Amino acid sequence: MVRRLRIWFGPERRTLTIIVVLIALAIFVASATGFWLLFRLAYVLALAIPLAWVIAWWNTRHLEAHVERRTSRSQVGQQAVEIIEVRNHDLLPKVWIEVEDPSTMPGHHSRRVVIVPSRRTRSWVVETRLVRRGLYDWGPLKVTTSDPFGIFRKTRRLGGRAQLLVYPPVVELPHFVAPPANLPGEGRFRKRTYYVTPNAGGVREYQPGDAFNRIHWRSTARTGELMVKSFELDPSSDIWVVLDLEGRVAAGEGDDSTEEYGVRIAASLVRHYINLNRPAGLILFGRGLEILDPERGPQQLTRALEMLATAHNAGDVPLGSVLMQEQRRFGRHTTLVVVTASVDDEWLTAAQTLGQRGVRMAAILIDPSTFAERPSSLLLYGQLTASDIMTYVVSKGDDLSVALSPSHTGVGVWPE
Image 1 (cartoon, rainbow, N blue to C red):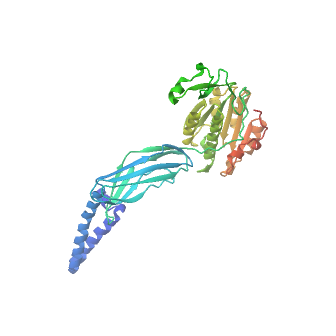
Image 2: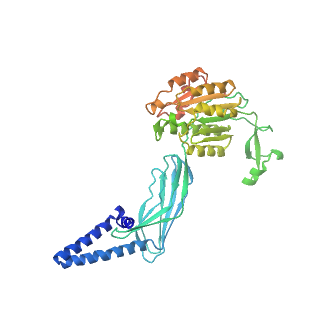
Image 3: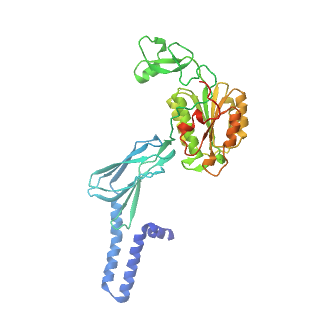
């Protein structure tokens, strides 16, 4: 009984509570004074309650709503687009219809109050600028109606849920270099050859004079045009990007945090090497260990961005332990790029051990002292450069294109 009374007279139905109080007060005063007008006022208010409920109930009948979400994957800075459509199948117009497609996306506002004429359709486009990476829920569509007096509100949920994956932003790194693994094909640009070699580097359109044994039939069937395999003269090293996601080293909040800077740097590094047609891989240890083996091509970049979209500083394993645990993946023909906000030198031993095995390494230090009251990474920077490890330092507010250039390292540039 008490629960039902809370439903009927709760805070969301304050108007109904006020009307019931007015009816009781009118009846009490009229009974005490015999003033007939108060009795009629009580009758009118009492009749208004069921009438308002019928109007609110009727507004939700013969109503159809549909949402077309045109975006399932996007990137920070782009727009998420959806088209909401409400159709009225009734002979009477629907008024005071509030339509909303709720979402956990920051800055998403889709609520709108519309009037839908008889047997007509109203539709509109909602655009949301994506400002934060992550995985967000969308829907279901919520349609709410009310009576003219605002006494009752009826809500229907239509359609299903959807999810939107927002990739982190990336920046161009035109001047970034890391120590090469001294393989013949370690140049900034891969060298193509028209001779058949053991190193297939991709496919291209058929040109007159190409041998038929170089035709790539699977790509030909997919594109409808003759495609042939292209080859590279020399091999090149694998690139591993290791992003430190240990929770205790994180500093700052929101976009101005070492977490967001680290994710942005890692995404930009993978994109940089993929654009150079180099095999790039990624290792994260946040909520769990995630490993993306080195490969080339746009699909590899997409897989890396998907991993980084939901990456968070929730790890409890130090960077040095991650490097030693996965050391079997790093050989003499490997270039390792470590991105971390740690100021501890405990992982320096692991880095030196890998260097002795022939692994070439670069370190990108995100200085936590510029994000919060934390120790500076200056001491670690000196230890890394003394160990002949190419080191970059990124501070809060830095332009990554400039900060990740040879002029911001502590050692000279390795020849390419």
